[in-house]
Image: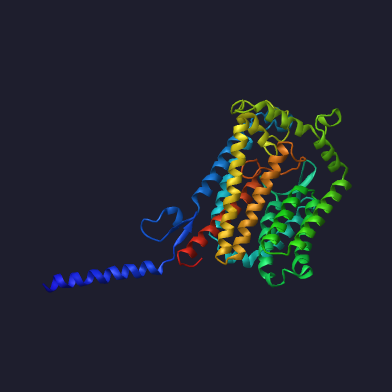
Length: 421
């Protein structure tokens, strides 16, 4: 009897202990649903955003296939005669592997370390942007000095500068929260920093990277709570500055005129050549495309088909359906990253939230520019399609950025479970 009574007495006590344990745990809110941390909690709640990873994997895999398709005929060109048909696809795959290793390292780094190191990362990026302009250090490709040679590979410092400016701007806004209503104390120092980066990028020249960095910095200033009047003043100054740079450069003016009329006799074989053949490629694809590998424009008609104009080859081989799929994937990716940023700010992790939203702005804006250029909606600009176009430094920067977003998401979930980030 005593053993039975002891067992009956232990059951209510065990039940109370389980109830207290559940009461001590904070619920996790994901996608509008709340979960308590139990053995049956979905794995997507306990770890990080797996759907975000799968979308990135889909873009990377599709991009690798399209880089192979778009570059397979390049060895027929005397300029690339010494390369094998799969040369660019193999190098692209190698960069994806190296980028995955870099992303795994970046994922292990806590966000408070990134916050402390943001100013030093910015200084390192400035040093590299200066180094690339030094003769025999920077490598010239197609008339632009944008790369630093690392033996068999080239590294583009402007891609690191995007991450560095993003981190620095987020850290700057956190430090200047108390003076964000005062122009000269809140905005002007950040404006000077972006202007210095811009001058170094224009010296390469790389106006496309400068545009992306300016949008990142402006977006973080706006999301950080800078006065709307100041924001629109900065926007107006940037628009005037970019207009002046275009007007002062004859070859940039020619690009604008070619964009306005790419089919004219003057432009069709000049500055409008790439755009006109990109439009021909997309037109040939119609709704369902000509099939994978069936593109004709990639056969030495469309220059840089595996880099800046990869989307035109996608449009030709996969048609309107393929273009819509690419646009949808980037829309979903941008929206999801912005949501993670808002969630972080709601948890009072302002730096992490601004970093995530800055990455969303970066990837979304760059994809928007590349898609607009390929569709003829925007003037030609040398920006690659994130995750898909051939380009080692760009792929690495994109994957490190996604790793940082996943780290932010993981720390958010740890906090929502009642733990520490």
